View: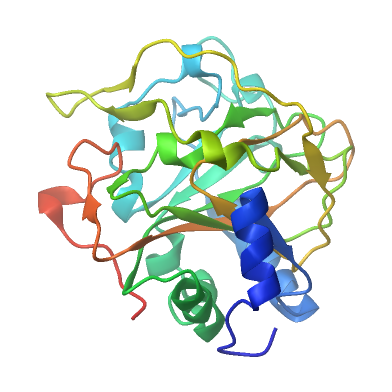
Length: 286
C-alpha cells in the first residue's frame, strides 16, 4: 500500500462483510525488524518489580490493579501467568516471561510513534472508514514467548474500549510470521453483526474493574479461520468481531504490535478502564 493511500472499495467491502481485513504486505521488512529490535532492547533494560503484574484474558482471573489502571499514559510490562510463582516472583528469565507491553508506546517510544501517530497510511485508513477525526487511545506489544505464551480467549474489542456511538477499530501488525504453532490470530467472519453484549469497565469508585453483565454466554466459534499472517502484514479488526489466539506451543516467539483508533467526534465513555489522569486528551492523527 502506498503512503497515504486508504482502503480500496473491495477492501472496504470485505471488512464490512467479515468484520476483519488482512492487508499484506503493509510494512517493509526493515520496519518490522527495527520494531522487534526496539522491543528486545526494552526487555533487556527492563528491571522487573519484586511483585509482577499479570495480564490474562481469562475473565474469571482478570485483576485490575493500580499498575494496570494507570498504564494509559505510561509504558508498562505485564507477565504471563505461568512465568510467576504464587508470590508474584519470576520463575523464568524476563525475556521469556513478558506477555504484553502497554499502553502508550504510540506516544512515548519514537519507533512506535513513527508507525502510529506519524504514519500517513494509518491516517488514510481511518479516513477510508469514515472517521471525521482520529484518536489513538492505546497501543500495546503482545509478545507470546515460546512455549509459555498463553492463549487469548475469544473476545471482542468493543467490550474493553467503548465510545458513543461505538467507533473502535483495532490495527494489529505481526512483527514475526504467525502460524498455528506460535499462536496466530483466529477470527469468526461475520460475527461482528451480533454487536457487543458486554463491557469491561471501571467500577463507580474508579479503583477497580468489573464486567457488565457479570456473566456472558460463550461466543460461537463456528467458521473461525486462522489468520496466517507474515511479518509486516496489517489486520484490521471491527470492534464487535470475535477473535482469539491459542497458546504458543513452538520454540519461536510471536511478536505483534497493535493500536486502537476511535473517531474523535464520538464520546469516550467515562467508565472505560482506560483513562488518563485528570481527563487528559488522547493524541490525534488528523
